[in-house]
Length: 88
Image (cartoon, rainbow, N blue to C red; front, side, top):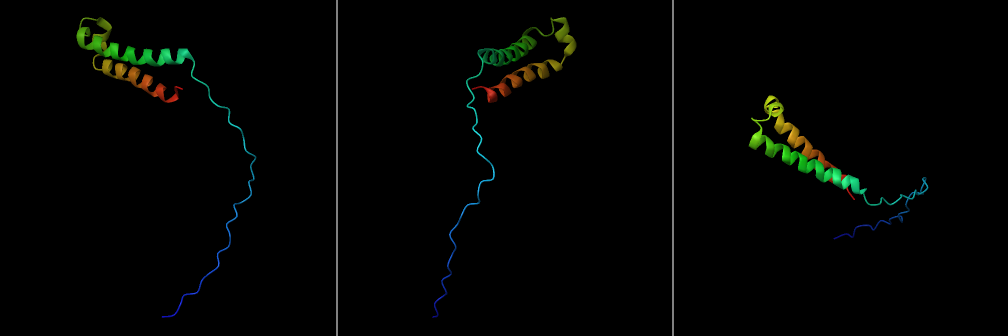
């Protein structure tokens, strides 16, 4: 059986850097107010939904909102949860 030819490979040379490296400033911890607002929004949304279930029909403005109470409560909680992605 004939032997296959061995091909020579050229050594890999990385392309020269055209950009100068930029030092990225390390992000410090979040401000304490950020954490308060984040947890506050989540708790406010939860409280909104609980009040809607327990006494929503007795409170005039909540009764007028109807099913929008669910959207308001969940929007508050989701906003707080989205803030957790930026929390350090």
